[in-house]
Every structure is written in C-alpha cells, then in structure tokens.
View 1 (cartoon, rainbow over the protein chains, first blue to last red):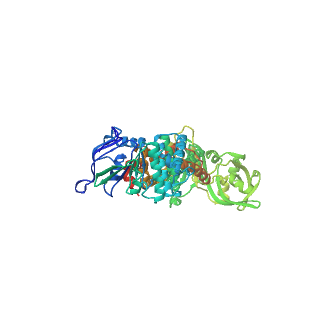
View 2: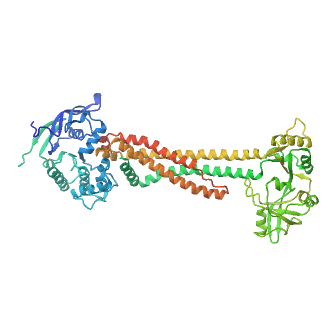
View 3: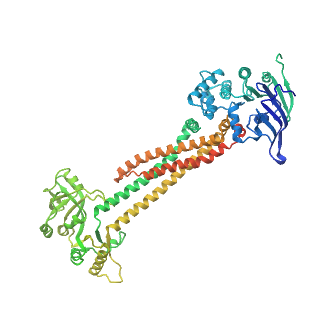
Length: 237
Length: 400
C-alpha cells in the first residue's frame, strides 16, 4: 500500500474494537490499517456487520479503539481524554448522518448555527455564517423552516450546512443518502463532491450504494472487521 | 460559554413551552402557598397582638367558672358587692369595672338593631382603653340612680344613625327610652373576631334593674396600679374571691383570674402554631413542585437523548451539556419562584382584606422561598443533567 503523501492526515494502525465481555464479546474490528491523506474522497463500503461504521465512529472520535493507534494530524487520538476528543470533533470534524439528526422544532438557521454556539461565536457571526452555509447548500430563504417543514433532501442539506459551518478539515458522512430517493441522493452527493473538490475538505463516507461510491476517488471495502480491498480510481476513470 | 449555553437553555425551554409552563406551575403553587400562609399567619398574629395591646397591659379579668367549656356556666355569677370588696380590700387594685351583659334590640325611629347592652361603671372605659369620639361618660348621679343613659359603639351608631351625631337623641331599648350621652371611638375586631364596636354601654345599676332583674355580674375587669406586681395582685384577688364564694381549701376555684399577658400568650400561641402548621403543609407542596421539576428533567433527558447525542457529536463538551440542562432547571424554578412571589403578594393582600387582618410584607420568607425554589432547580436538575452529559454519543444517536 502506497501513500501519496509522506504524512497522512489520518493514520490507523492495528485498530481493534471489541464490544461486550467474556463469552458475549464481539470483535467488530480485527486489526485495521488505513491511511487517509488530506483532500481525499474515500468511500467505505462493505456488508452489514463488516465494521465499517465502527471504524467510522473511531475516526470521528465518537468511539475509542480497544487497541491499536489512531493518529490524527500527528496526534495520538487513542490517548486523548473524552473532553479532548470532543474538542477535536468540535474544531476539525464535521458529521452527516443517515437520519439527518437535526434538532426538532428548531429552525434551519438555528440548527446550522449550533456548532458555532459551542465554539463561542458571537450572534452576528453565527447568523452570517449560518446564512452563508445554507446558501452554499442551496437553501437560501429556508432559514426559518423547521425540519418538519423540509423534505428529506432539504433536511440532509441543512445537516450538511451544519457540518461545514465550522470549516472542518474532515467531513464524515455515515450513509448520507440512505434515507433519500435517487434524485435527491445525487443532489446531496454533488454537494459533497463539490465541497471536496472546491474547498479541499477530506471526505470519508460510509455507503453501500455503488452509485454513491462512484463519486469517491478511492473505495475501501470492509469485510469481517478487516480491510479487504483498497482501490484508487484513475482520474480519467 | 455561559452566555451561549444560556441561549441554548432558553431555546430549549421555548421549544417545549407547554411542558415548561406546567413544570413551573408546580413551583409557582408551592412558593405562593408557603408565602401566602406565612404572610397571613403573621398578619393574624399581628392583629391579635394589636388587639391585646388595645386592651391595656395591666388588665386583670375575673370570670365565673373554669374555662370556656361545658359546665362553665354552672358556677354562680358574681355580685356587685364582690366588685366593691375587690376595690376596698386589695391595695394594689386601681380600677374595678363589674359588668353584666344582655342581648337586646335597640330602636331609633324606623331603624332597629340587635346588639348587646353592657352594664358597667365608668372604670370600664378607662380599663378597656375606650376613648370617646363625642359626648361624655356617666355622671356619678347617673350611675348611682341607675339613670337610662347610654354610650354607643361605632357600629351601633352606624346602624341607627348612619353618620349622624347620636348624642342627645333618645333610643328605645325594650320598654324604656334611653338618652344617648356619648359615642365611643371605633376599635375594630377583637382578638376573637368579634366586633367590639357593636355595643351599647349603660350604668350597671340601670341594666340590673331594667334588663337582667338581678344583682349578678358576669365579669369583673380590674387594673393593677402602675408598678404593682400583677402576679401578687392576682394571688390576693384569688384568695379574696375564694373567701367570698365560700370555697373550702379542698375545692377547686369556680372562677378564673386572667391577665392580659396570659390572654395574649394563649391567642398568639394559637395563631403561631396554626401558621407553622399551614406553612409546613405549604412547604410540602413546594417539595412536590420540586419533585415535579426533577421528574420533568428526567423525562426530558430520556426524550431528548438523541438531541444530546447530536450535540455531543458536533462538539459539545460534557460540561456544556450539563450546564445547559442545569440552566434550564434553574430558569424554570427561579421563574416559577418569582411568579409565585407575585401571586402570593396579590393573594395575600386580597385574603388579608377579606379576613380583616393587616397585610405584612415579610422579605425573609419571600427571599427564603425564592432561594429554596432555585436550589430545588439546581439539586433536582443536577442529576438528570449529569446523566445526560455522560451519555455515550453513539448510544445517544442510536436512541429513537
């Protein structure tokens, strides 16, 4: 396996993850090595239970590995405290989930602003950044709508705006199109691809739809808690 | 961080307005109940204290019978001579006012009014701290001859004469006419809640001859000389009355000697105990309100598990989630406390007005209730908040 850059942004070495204890223990990851360079667009594929979501949660600092090392930009994440991992999420990572995970009964603008509140931004800063992010995902004019008043595609775009408002280094998308029809799926994927291409945001996306994986330039396939294959697509392919 | 978290908490309260209002209601009722009960209790105590003060501090009251219960009436009344004996034989006694009372109907022109006539001596006015609004009290001749003259209380004046001057007019009581010679200044309710101004006062002899038809006296009011010991005067008085009523050494008294302080202690003691009891009942309702807050916060955390997961995933720190839930609880309970204080103030003024007792604003109980309601918010908000903050973000996100 060759790395295109000498120091990858994300470097996993021998990552294992075991859930439960004793006879009920289940090993979701059995030694995963993975490097992701800055600016890459990686699709993570694999059947259910292959460990792809677990790997994603570990990369997203939502979960910590049972063993192995995870370096983010040279920092050993596995040694960080819960609080330090939260700060890393806050400052460098953006999340998009399959279920959108917007706050109910809360306007699109307030949803998008949420990460900035935790960063301690001023009200005017938040509003202008929130509006800009909504505009970027094509939802200018929808600021005051609550999730219940938005379609699935629009909700996912609000979630995307929320993920990028902090200008993260890495966007982690867990089945972002899993709940969407094919047309809106493509709209959302176009947006994600544009973020990767135009803003240099590194994208890691879990999906099991080959159509969506085609947007990525690299496809990592998980089987049974291990990386089975790692393909880089040619630029002309 | 604090300011932004406050915004988040206020938004969360606003999003669940109905639930927030219902939670607050528990605290509002609790705080309002405590403050109202204590305020009214204090008002009642003050009213009793004022009442007692208006009786004069060195008053000694002698009544036949023991206590107020059944059988109290079995003891024989006093005679006019008993009062004379007290005046002549006990050196520390200043004023002695024997009194007998009778329910009558007083008529003036087309108005009539059912009231009480008290037959007594001039000492009665002085001992009872009565002041004249108009006219005069009895002359010696009127007292000795049992003339048909009377002094009216303010309520009787009001019923028979309206705001007019009654002095010099003649009112009819039973079969005889009676000249009004004086009008008493209003005193208001007694400690027992009776209208003290609903009274007609006549010379003792007049009432005994024309209304009761006996030499009996229901009550002897006396005052001790300034500087004299109330206790020793009471002892002397008791000994004298035992002798005059032929009570042998083995028998109990068949009369009671009370002084003002005793009466005051009995009455204020009663209102104080009532205030305490009511306050305790109200405190329980405040506690229930607090449990309501904790309940809502717990439900809220469970219901909002997913929301907490989202917040944690996008970078909220454990402390920030804790703070947000804590602020929500404190805002709810403090706001409830403030509203409760306002409700209590309004309620107390209205109820005090109806009950005819003074409204006394007491800062201590208001402050105490407010601090307590906020503390409830912190204590009962803390545990659900901590539970929320410690959730595993992945678990929380998976929660439906």
